[in-house]
Image (cartoon, rainbow, N blue to C red; front, top):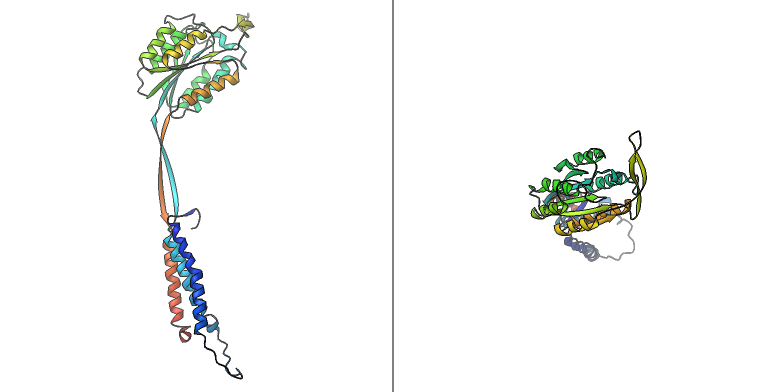
Length: 332
């Protein structure tokens, strides 16, 4: 009954100060009611009565009843809170991922593509209220997953992304254009593309600047990420006889000028990720920049607990009245 009790009107507890005043008044009146008689001997007058000794019990019962009423006036109650959230400004996001052979370079651990997939998965899990889609591109581009609110589908598709699904190359314009196509019909309050590449545009029939103009036309913000260390990186340079890649040191070339232009034109921002930690920091920053507005509703359900106290006070007064008019009647 008394677990998690709160009081709606705690100011009524000040009335408890009446209790010591009532006790003082009772002691004063009791002393006034006692008469004195001087005699040489009290032999024959001594009366040992249990009722006379228990007479103060009547006053105690009244005090307890008063304390119960005061506590009831303070309105003890329990509170049950239920919370509901409503997404008021959702965001649609397409992640455009470079899946060319250079993404197998090992300047990030274990390689660029694997590092990206791990960080991107963490980003997706942090966006529970947004719709997310995936686009892969190399020499051409394709939609891996249309924008959806089902994160399990997006995460499963992200795990499946691998090199070899497309002709090799880096078609930045194609990847961006496909991403724009996925978002152009979106009714979301905010539409965002996160485009990642580790090279320069060398494939495709759509120029990156043309794709950026399309993004501007449809109000789509684009964050661009250049992935790769400064200098040389251990990268695929040829095929072995068994079809596996032969690795060697190769200069990292990223068209940062182009990526900055795309980001600036669309209202986004350009980032450079030179290692795993920096890549993770970039996605964390984008996560902070693109906030989804959530409206929270709290519903309070109160259960009043004063009724048992009123019942207790009434019972105490009833007992006091019964004792006063029976057991203690001759002493009043």
